[in-house]
Amino acid sequence: MNERELQLFRNRLLDLSRQCEDRNVPTHSYFLTVEEQRFAAQCLPNVAGIRVISDGVFCDAERKVLFFLPSYLEEPPEDELICLELAPRAPKFAEPLGHRDFLGALMGLGIRREMLGDLTVTENKAQLVALPAVKALIERELTEVRHTRIEVREIPREALSAVRRTEVRSVNAASLRADVLVAAVWNLSRTRAKEAFSTGKVLRNGTELSNPAELLRAGDVMSLRGKGKFRLCDAEPRTTRSGRLYVDIAYFV
Image 1 (cartoon, helix red, strand yellow):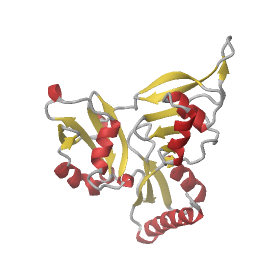
Image 2 (tube, rainbow, N blue to C red):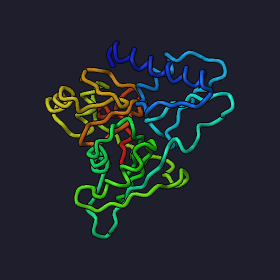
Image 3 (cartoon, one colour):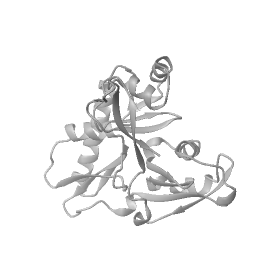
């Protein structure tokens, strides 16, 4: 975010805080990216009688809603976030579906990304956290993903997968530069990797990253549109006996 966007974001959060304080009712943001959550933690002042809590329902959620709670509430109201399952109507005849397919179908309905939380896919079924305002639209309009007929149903929080599935992989990378790791993880040439940055296809912690020379830190989550997502595990590459450098990543599957 640039300076103007940061100021608008800060003003929105302060307005939510003031509404909670003046009206003595809970208020909340849309779903925030990891970067927005970090900025919110830095810019929000402590207000007596108001608790600020983030919730994304998944225990390892990346996208979270920021709740401003009056003193009489200990936890955010559960009905402020909904959980949905998207599953093929005829599983035996369904084509393979991935995260990109489900998210693309949702965005195709005209839903803004900030209305949706994390989405996970396991065994051709997707689980999604969303704001209640888009529930009716998804249930009414989301009938197909690619060419597969889909059934949408609301599920309780307890039915969500506990954690997002990852595979730990070691990739050959000479440094922690963003373009080096993106190229290594998805087997791209350095030229194609840099093109991905210049065309806005690379995100770090949910925010577009345009500088391919940016150094990544342990815990950073990198996404390449149309390819997938990984989290950097190591703070430093390790050297094998043969002199090759490797970095461990957790690849989201």
